[in-house]
Amino acid sequence: MIHQFPVRVYYEDTDLAGIVYYANYLKFIERARSEWVREMGIDQVEMKAEGFVFAVRRVEADYLAPARFDDELLVETTLSERTGVRLTLKQDVKRGEVLLFSALVTLICMNEAGAVARLPAAIRQSVH
Image (cartoon, rainbow, N blue to C red):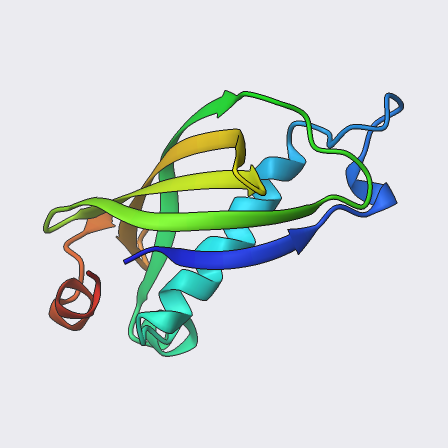
């Protein structure tokens, strides 16, 4: 399943050259990931109350082409791999059919002590 999340580029997202500042792509994909998790039926507030949170373990990113002020972008999120302790997502940012940015993001689950924890069964079952 491909989750799609629209993003418009605002002036605050750009640098002096008028293109999206590289770190803002990470913000765009974070927002899309949050919506993907919500769409999977995972309540992160409830998850935290149970002593678990998601954390980004690794990001591998490729910047392929610039986005500019007022562009309408689409962040596409797909599950690449799921294990008992991690989720790997492929997240692409596109303008129309043009791929601008692509990332592989590894998420882990952490307990209250900050240690890596096995993904709760309900999460393993709901993520597809």
